[in-house]
Length: 172
Image (cartoon, rainbow, N blue to C red; front, side, top):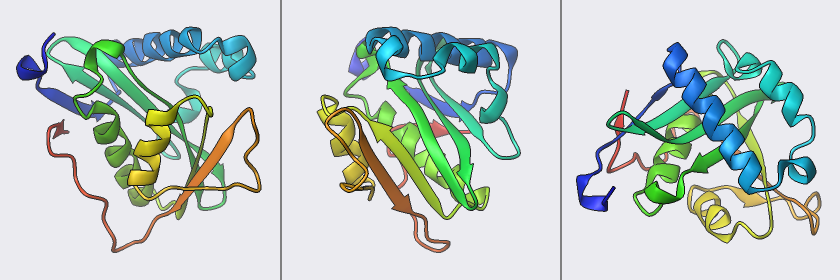
């Protein structure tokens, strides 16, 4: 797949096909990061999947180029007026196309629409590109809660403010 050929579509994973593709991408992501140490309760999460990622409190988004699922992200309730962005993953073949940003922008818009005021996330210190993406979207690191093993970020969602919309993806 070349950058010039790719038209990216970001949409809710509602169909059985999209939900299974999202599950497969979550597993691919976890395996790439050694999920035994990085993802507590991942096996249970997959057994209950898509569970907490579904409406009315969550969302599950998938990015496709043609028939191929190339990215995924989920949103789950984390507390009163607070949600957590989880498992933002883009396959290596689709990196550099803005897919991660498109997924994150759509997720933040959905979080706002669902009534959340804050979105939190965790990432690994070695995921430098992801940290740059999060900071570029307005997330701030919570250094008091971060550690050498996990970095914690949050963003306050304004009801009137808007994150720059994706320029490359078709958002459905």
